[in-house]
Structures are given as structure tokens and as C-alpha cells.
Length: 174
View (tube, one colour):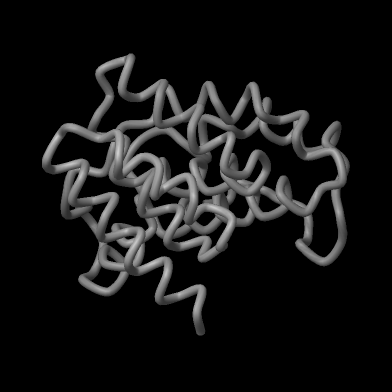
């Protein structure tokens, strides 16, 4: 995808440069059907945001993207089985942006997103959010997931949280 240009990942990029890239390229990074190139570019961009010393300045744009991106819905057209599996395991484009926000804000970001999705009736976005916590593999999320398990009344979401907690606990042990 030649219209998605990102700086080399070797160094840290200022939030001002990243914001300029986002404003000129966010549609190429987030809109339309997912391609491997688009998914890879969005992942690289989010990696640069997380590494940026002032990457937190991009939170408003990332939160807007989260509200606009749909939850993963199943097999992605035009991808082979392995490509589709990898992208699905990472929650498609929504999952990439969710993990970026989680890395910037930590457990408080998880709670903010979880509550926002519940209040906004966007329960389909909760599974990629919870799975994103597992993919990050950070122990700091264990307590917040445990708290959500106690509070969650929806049986399907409760099961997703329990599974994530057990897998994350196992992963953190290693």
C-alpha cells in the first residue's frame, strides 16, 4: 500500500510528527477492508506511538478511531488462511488500536474502555479489548480483570474474562 508511509521504526518519533502522520494517513490506516499491508502499517504506527516519549498526546485520535472501527466479524476476504488467523487473533484493526491505548494508559485505560463499551451498547468490542490484555501479557492487568470477573453479570462476558484471567496468570508466571 504505497499511500501508507511511516518513518523507520528505529528511533523514537515525537507526538507532533505522529499526529501529522495520523491526520494525513488515518483513513488509509483504518478504513475499508483489512489488508495485510494496512494491518502491518497500523501495527507499526501504534508501536511508534507507544515508544514515543509523548505518545499519550495521540489518545484523542486513538479513542476516535476506536469508536469508528468495527469489532472483528469473522473471516476477512482476500486473505489466505494464515494471514486471516494472525489478524483475527490480534483483533483486526480495532485490536491493534485497543492495545496501543492499553499500553499508553494501563489498567485505568482498560476500565475506561470497558465501561464505555458497556454504556454505549458496544459489547462486541469487549472481547477484543479483553483479548488485547492477554496479548500484552502484563501482570498489572491481573487485578483489574479479577475485579471485572466479580462484577460481570453477562455469562458470555464473564466467561471471556475468566478465560483471559487464567491465560494471563499462566503467561505472567513464565
